[in-house]
Image (tube, rainbow, N blue to C red; front, side):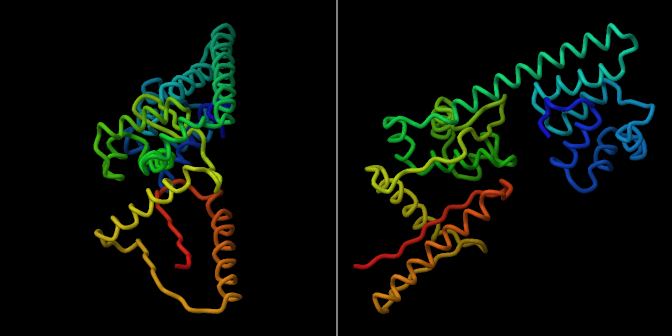
Length: 268
């Protein structure tokens, strides 16, 4: 559900609880509001009782909504609780304006996302592994703040701020207050690009560095194979098939973890 398409504040809260909190969300919200879970169920069940404005402020904080989402949720509540036709029409007009403003912003973002980086920007983007890593990591809700990115990627704060400033300027990430999000979700570098070597080298260096830190997830495999030329082609096709299957998993997958992946298959 798009926030600005909602017509009822209760539907919007129920959606956010499911997406952001998950199992036990009503009980957790009740504990946060210091009320009974039955009260939450009554309101969201669209009975005769409503949340108060004070509740909405707390719920917005509980759900970590941005300013625009919080304002829209509050206007939906005020429209629902309006005691006169004039008051209801007043908040209805406010909601319409906010929906129109959001459509303009979405259009601008779509147009920006359809633009490709120029050569100078690509040279910066592929000059260091951090640009692509921060770009992707910003899509993960648990990592969308600068201090979280700094801890996860182990980047110095001044350099991380420089990277984020570049990514934001180029529309590759978005910023809402202290939170970051992803803009362009994918960038493809053609195999004949003069930057492809630097891109591969960046992550080969990261792979070597990761050998110094053992954990239960990392997987490193190196081997020298002797096989027929025909079978060498079969192995190569297996890896190509794997890359295609990886995309089928990647596209619908939720953004929860950032990982680096290198595959090397070569002859001396």
